[in-house]
Image (cartoon, rainbow, N blue to C red; front, side):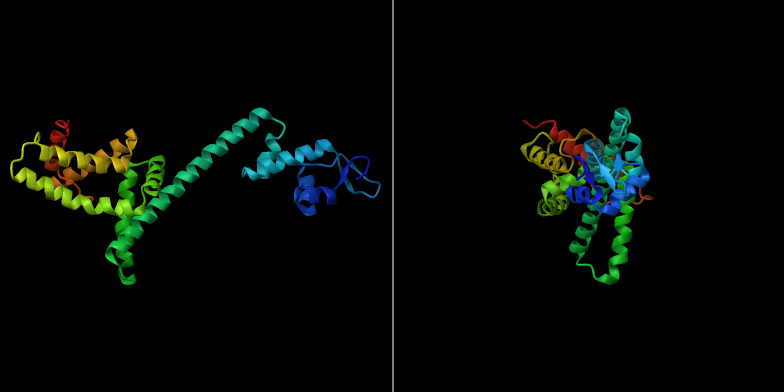
Length: 251
């Protein structure tokens, strides 16, 4: 230290940076030493050190050096940059959660089929097709929320729900075939379970609920059209109508 100032080597030790990094910051004009010794050694005062710590903080937030140089002395620019960076990070998080959700679908498909490696390409094609379908109904934020809900609910419960749907739809079909009154306790019980399983999917999120219902109704329309190919083996229009009527009679 000279006259209360820090030499570059000592500053590197205190901050955990390398001398080479501090030299680079100097060359960029990002953090320049206030003085130099007669021999040309860099000397940093308290103001220089404070500026360096601001640079370190912004770097830890993920800002590139060129942006840091622009915003360091401009509070308004700093706020705007951080807001933009926050938005971009949120989008990246949503995208990663969407990718994780897709991986979860792939894993579930492979595990359910005990798929040999020779059939893996078929699984990938099927999952990719479903991904494209999902993207038409769910935006990036919703896909991220679905990934979070999957993690909260857990794969075991998700598997239970997926396994329950075919038998529940069969029970609804049987009730309709027998002419069961939608207002009867049997029909209401089916509707309550049906809606409960759907709630585990959308979590009472209005956007997810609307998108889910749009998928179900569009798929039902495809099932009713002999020339079309349904997106998946979901409920029919008749099943949804019966459940809807029964749901209205719940106590």
